[in-house]
Image 1: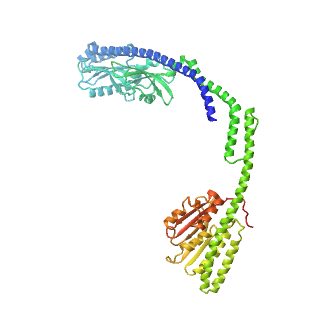
Image 2: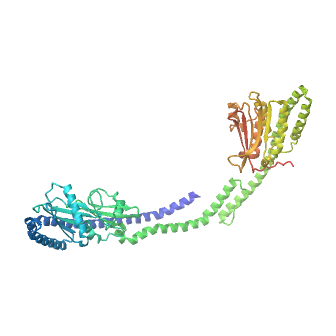
Image 3: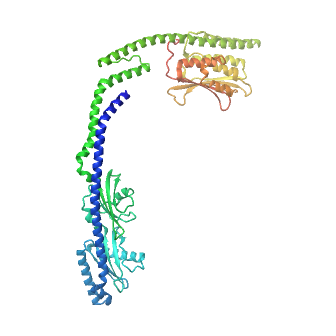
Length: 587
């Protein structure tokens, strides 16, 4: 059935798959073309922006370089710190730098610092945070003096991090004369602010990073999100590539360009779906075509299911039930003409099998009953010979009272045995029967043999095949009896099964004798023992065979040696197993 469905499915796929593959290929090709074009456009725009930014930084370099020739800087070099001329020159310079801030929108702060007097002039566009900016300038001056103590040249633009976490570009000119230095601070967020106005799509943005990958801005793209994709970015300093934010389950195109005037890199992070927004209809077609194909395939399979699969599955289920022995199954014939004939033939076949099986089963029960009675009768001569031997020994001792007592026990014993029409008995009757047998044995060995029979009321009325315990007790007397360890004790006990007390219970026959020989123990516990003829150990083989006939695989018979000393036989019996079919319970 699965093969038929698979072939139908393959046929449908062979028709639809080429079209779907063509559309997918066309869509992928179109997306790649759009991605390449947009990437090139953004890359060119970013290159132009970075080039303009580098040119602006060069202008700032020139401004700082020529600052030494400013008249007010010269006057500050000439006049003492406390003089009026120094204060006026400083004020005029402050006004000039303030006007420069209006011209250079990129600059955040100008400063002039005297290394000899420690006097600091700061002009910043963030007047609200003037004090914080002064502290930041002092921090940067100290860091610069430590990192470049002997550098009297202009040097490169340096990346500095303020106490509040903001990053700045700083440039210092130490050649203004008389220990004066001039410098510029540019806030990193100001450098990428124009880029933030570019359309990067939902979730996109712009960021500046250092060569080691440290994020220098956080305003227009969160640094934490950048960490999620930074491991996918190669070490190229320019160009573009595709990365994926796994948390957002979204792809982004990264366009990068490094500055030639400072150790930093500008990056545009563009949402891919923003680039592909001009391909919505093709994408929808690609997404919905498989769904449409699946819908058509579903309708087709429903039709085939009704015409072909349903009657086939009905037939297969019927065959499986027949294989499991459920001969009462019949199939409904309301199908197409072809299947109606097939199902009618199947139902007729099941009727014939059912009638045949009933005949075979009845014959099997008759044979089983005959075998069961034969196995039961086999034990009677076996014990009869042992009983006569005991009577002979007691008579030889001229112990009349013991002979009388034993005769009573023996009479009860054989009265029990002679009821051969019984195929089951209660466990209590079996234990009483064993008690008669053991009383006879105790009379034979009065000072060396004793017994202990434990039968809780819970199990006393449990129905068992006759004489399944007695052969093990008899073997314990015949083969296990010894005077070497003192009084010989035989114990028969019924108790809960420790593993499944609601389903099974244990019958244990144990003694404190020599136990089983290792080779005998291995033979008795082997799986092949039941298949043997039983000539060597007739009593044990007989019991095992009858247990198998009554309980099947639910019964377990184990032979063990106890850890301290002696033999142990355990019979694990089910609590809720019906009697073998065809037997009659004695009433």
